[in-house]
Amino acid sequence: MSAARPLTTLRAIAVTAALPLLLTACGYGSEAKKDEDKPAAAASADGKKLSASEVRVGYFPNLTHATALVGLQEGLIQKELGGTTIKPQSFNAGPSEIEALNGGSLDIGFIGPSPSINGYVKSKGSNLRIISGSASGGVKLVVNPDKIKTLDDLKGKKIATPQKGNTQDVAFLNWIAEKGWSVDPESGKGDVSVVRTDNKVTPDAFKQGSIDGAWVPEPTASKLVSDGGSVLLDETDLWPDKKFVITNVIVSQKFLKEHADVVEAFLRGTVKTNEWINANSDKAKESANAKLAAEGGKPLDAKVIDPAWKSILVTDDPLASTLKSQADYAVKAKLIEQPDLAGIYDLTLLNKVLKAAGKPEVSDAGLGAK
Image 1 (cartoon, helix red, strand yellow):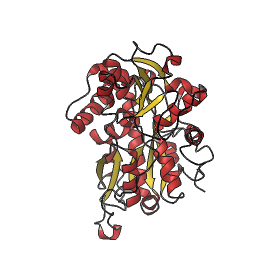
Image 2 (cartoon, rainbow, N blue to C red):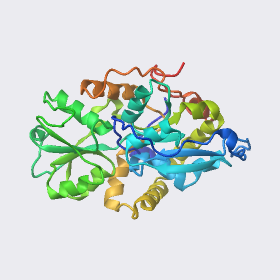
Image 3 (tube, rainbow, N blue to C red):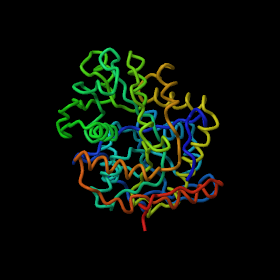
Image 4 (cartoon, one colour):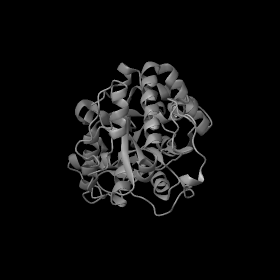
């Protein structure tokens, strides 16, 4: 398996967004044009002519999607694609990205494990594949230290998660169950009040006192700390080897089948982006912040981005065994039925790219496509 190392040792960052399990039924974007209607693509970085003129790529404007932010900002992914143009699409919720993939208006996406699982199950394994990892970590429980001083103090308090059934919501519900407490997964009511709140709204809700804390990804966690919050728990500490998937790279199976050469070039770009991030920490942080500023209108303050940066791992490894664990947590929380995840991964092209780069191949934990 390839290394997924802390930023403090590798000087790396990554981006992910916490994304919901429960999908909406509406479509997003227009249907993709058929390839025969498109002009032939120009040569890629290695001089090979690729089979598609463009590739539509989804991502979130969050620090846990640093591979996307930095790769796009620095042109590192585009360089590998050559004349195949990246058409980036920014999303703020998992359902919309999954629906864009399902609807044919998106080809490749950076997305969290919960929507990856739900999207795969909803399509009965016929639509997406996870083709790479991107990020691990970067999720914290931040609380009002005047109201909550220990983990046991959470009982009876109002704690926010980004959305019902999203990756952080599932993790928090699982943690609550392990404490022996009870919460209704639909309403969020119980021994702890789980308040589903958009990450954009959470900091204001925290400052106003309408929530007592939040189980959230970066940079929201560090924003709460900058507003007087205290980190009570880092989710990384709950996982073996302190690693768990927070961002995957997924692809439409149709696009993978018809344009494997484009997908391979894209993965060369993500692998090289992660290498560049590792080797150029300060520049990469500035690059990610510049991309976030372009998305949101202003960059993150140093007091927010610096601690957030240190808590995230960037990795090509999808950490497949932890995705299975997260699916089990969702089942335990009664958010989904037991899913059949056989075939959710196809790491063939990633391992080809890694091998060519002299890097160790990564595992699909027995969940690979046959």
